[in-house]
Each structure stands twice: as structure tokens, then as C-alpha cells.
Length: 185
Image (spheres, rainbow, N blue to C red):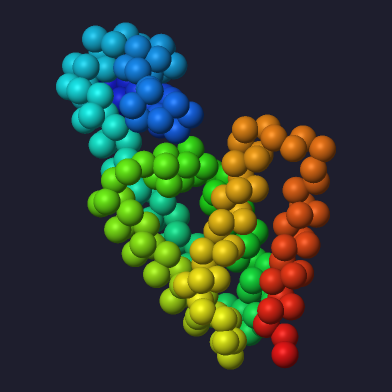
């Protein structure tokens, strides 16, 4: 079985699991979405549980690498908190757009190992924000949750095609402007 087959099955599984949930997703739907047979899926992964765990593992690794890349690219490069915040939020918007299915699956999954990893990621980002938004009394880890919650909700609206009449750029700009006010005395 080729790497291309595995990739198609994993991508299809992510999509189906994210939209239907782990329990409601069927191997038949996943195989059909990938353009493969259930037999191929079972030969490659053995069980639906194995496939699910591989999807989670692969996507957690991808998320961690993406976050590490964002931190590396932005850390310590902006002397102005306002400019940093704008760039950070724009980067996170792209990150969520590119990873919305995985993030949705992770957030809605009942998996303590993943929850621990996500907690570590939020702590990592919180420390990053604290370094780059100095002299604020705001708790950086709370700020991470606040920013990411906004971006997650906005990304879900876009992903599911809700609120087609809303101009998301305006929502983001308003959010950033309101957030900047929190840093001014």
C-alpha cells in the first residue's frame, strides 16, 4: 500500500471524524471519502480506533510544529506590543484556518492525553505572549485562551459557512483594537 493511500485515508478520516465525531464516523464513510475500500482501510490501520489514534497523533504533531514555527518567527522581533499583537493574531488566524478540522476534533475529543498536550501548548504560547507583551498586568495564559477562543469561533463560522453576511476582517480588526485598549493605561 502506497504512502499516497495512507495519506488519503488519514486526510479523509480527519475530515469525517471532525464533522461527525469519533463515534458517529464510519469506516465506510472514511474509505469512500478517500476513494478507497474499507478493506484497504482495515489492511492499513487494522481498526477504526487505530486509525483515529493515528489521525490524532499526526495532527497533534503538526499543530505543535506549526505553533513552534510561529513562536520562532515572531519571538522578540517586535518592540511594540500593538504591532506584535496584530501580527500574532493574523498568524493565528492562518494557523486555525489551516488546522480547523484537527483543532475541532481535538477540542471535541474526550482524550486526556490530548488535553494534556493542548494544555502544554497553551502554556508555551502563554509564556511566548508574556515575553512579547511586557509590562502588562494581564495574565498571559488567560490572554491565550481569550484570543484563541475568538479565533476558533470565527474559524468555525468560516469552516461551516455560517454568517455569510459578516465581514470577518472587520470583526478581527475590531477585536484587535479592543484588545490593544487592554494594554494602555
